[in-house]
Amino acid sequence: MSDFPYFMLRLVAGVSFLGHGLVRLPKLPAFSQWMTGRFASSMLPDALVTPFSYALPVAEFIIGVLLVLGLFSQMTIIAGFVVMLLLMLGTCLIENWEALPSQMLHALILIVLLQFIVSNSISLDNVLKK
Image (cartoon, rainbow, N blue to C red):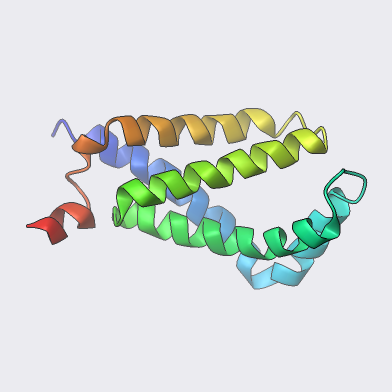
């Protein structure tokens, strides 16, 4: 039972990533257009923003599914952290300070998950290694 809080925290992160990706995937072109518009006045060129805006929902969805399942957990947590770092950088570049605390909280949850990954017993990783 001591591993249950870890499982719950992994689900919190997973559902958040999954939900972000899930709602954006069906409207991918509109999401990309919105994101590109938000970065139009930033120092980032469209040549970087546009591909990222298409890749982000896919990455969020995949990371979310893998976190919920507890599959490839260590790599998935690191991938999620890299996504959060990129999002935080973009948020700073467009001075969207209101979004930064939420992104930092996501990153912090991922750091905690990685730190205590030995508690990842309620997972497909654990099932598959037996």
